[in-house]
Image (cartoon, rainbow, N blue to C red; front, side, top):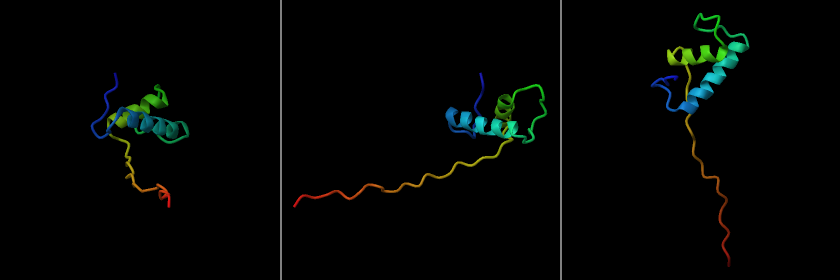
Length: 73
């Protein structure tokens, strides 16, 4: 079973980051690990586990998008 690193707050974020990194590797980006016999997804997961991939989580900006309530007169 894959161990999720401490710097990643959920397993869902780990999956998303792994998929994004794997896509980069498949697109021609150089892997940070020299494991030529593994698939891009496995390499991406190992890179995240070893904290070789830098990422940032954008802040959520909360806005009040509700329309004004109509009042009956």
